[in-house]
Length: 137
Image (cartoon, rainbow, N blue to C red; front, side, top):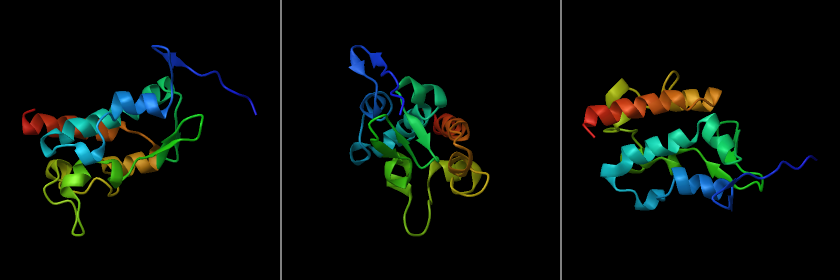
């Protein structure tokens, strides 16, 4: 197996840890409702190919990201700040993404579906930016 050189930023080896420091610095349990949209946008911006490569991460079937040491970060409802506040057993009533499109983000053609199908974070990034604009933030 070929060992890839490790990238460094400010003397720190690039990894899932450095990615989290830049794009997921506040754990879901500590996110406040008023910060959920910006928290989500920050995470999704970190899922672009450019930002994953910058931290030496790879996208594993759009389910999680992984670093060279096989540390994993799941991209799911458990790491979504909006799901923390709006998702329950009956759906996602009140979620800014549902207000934007009228549909849950995991349905065909919606942003999370596009991520899970194609690994493309851009539809979610665009949708979150629209939601932020709608909310006046």
